Length: 406
Image 1 (cartoon, rainbow, N blue to C red):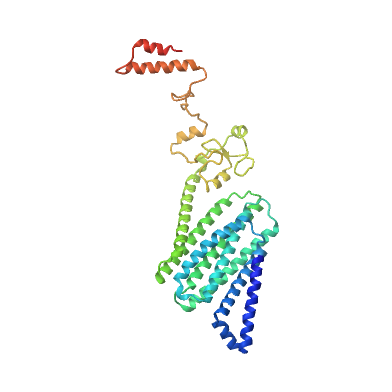
Image 2: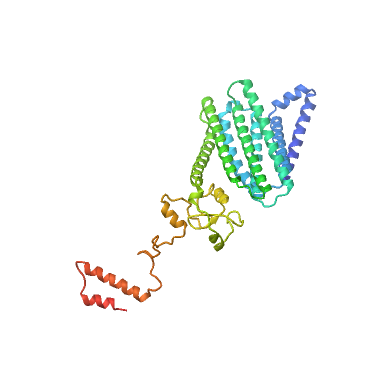
């Protein structure tokens, strides 16, 4: 911030000097303005001062609504900035016939507004994962998101008005699309924050929070995918292939496809949870740990997985939206097609034991009554019988000596 202030002061002094020279040498307003607009040095100084003014305004907005940035927020800002700059350069090549000072100013403003949106999303994520947040932080983040929504709507109205007035394809399509995406992202982030506040007021007992959040993200991805496809078609029909949209379109489509597959798998698993996952008996609750590992709350009723671990039914439902493995042992939570096998595993059937008999199977380990010497003798006798059934085998005395070696 100190470097920006120093650079802003020098830029302002240079601009004041050039303006003073223009008016003192021309002595009239119109010739002075013509000189400022035609002189390359004066034009660069004025343009530099405008960009510095936008950066200073960006810093002030950040300081008022966010305060000091955290390390994760700075990393997110640096990573996203370079990628967005590259995409903007691709966009400039598409709209090169519309390149002007106003276009450059709009591009700079778009980058700064996007940076504020990244910080808002990161700050909401931080608030959601922090146990205690001061009331001032809530007020600042709500005011910040409302401010961003107003800015998005203003820029969007300006771009749409220019597009309607000209009635032809222009660079206004690009800015209309970008601010429409930003506005929908702001609304999605704000609704997600409302879900968090509602769950906080309910003291973490809102069971459907994860479900509503999942649907919100699914709808948001669908809206973004539709907007990207419409913009891609509009640019392709009027300007050619929009290279800067290929990555965004691919990532949005991939995220939407992943969410759809997760949703289908989630609905398949949770469609009949009462049948697939039996209720834990009072003896099972008393015998084990009654604390749900997902919410860290005590369980009075619980669902039992195939691996034997117990969880709240609403915690298990919210967990299945993100993962399909047991939170404790990471065993896959896949309901088997064979109902009898599932019932046997759910009711504690031991591996290596035949169901209904209670006796070890042939592939099980030796019981405790069989000592090591008897096991060796049995293994030797088995080997001898194999040799006896073969076409070529050693003499009998050799086998007997091997059997009674111990």
